[in-house]
Image (cartoon, rainbow, N blue to C red; front, side, top):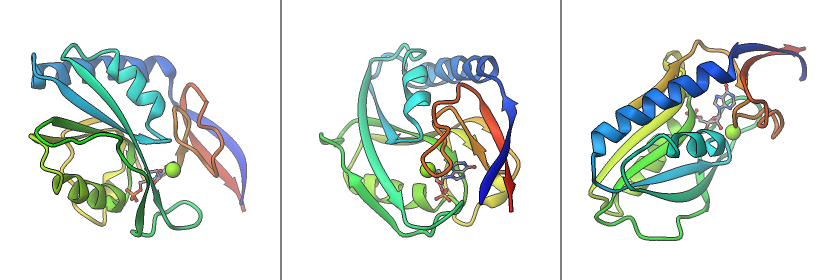
Length: 176
Ligand code: IMP
Ligand code: MG
């Protein structure tokens, strides 16, 4: 498959405006209580940085990388932790930051795993949500944008590891 075109769908301004709103909502939820943001690499890296700057509660930043086996544009449900957290989350308010929820398989696995580590609270924030694609139910607390079932890239999201650095989010048009 080759990419024919990338059509802008969400501009950098729209994304950053929405992130400021999410930051306010998250700050209201935690108030003065500290919150540990877990950035799921690599897709969430731009989103996490931008969002962290907009949260007024005390923030701790952690990173984790997972790989969901599967070729092309869908995940298989077999999830592997490639890089685990460097610290314990026991007794902490944890907010998992994802780029996109598609089938829900990656997050469903990850949330179950994190739950066993006894955080004080465990919530989920995603920049994008494709509800039409959901196979496994996942409780999402904060959503940036609901989007239709189209493959998107940019603002951290990749196609074959490319286009993560686009400052906007665009639909991919594929040449068969
Ligand atoms: P899920 O397990 O099916 O929910 O897949 C989640 C992961 O699939 C995300 O973290 C992304 O890495 C990837 N993904 C799903 N949809 C897209 C998309 O439209 N563009 C880029 N990556 C995507
Ligand atoms: Mg990915």
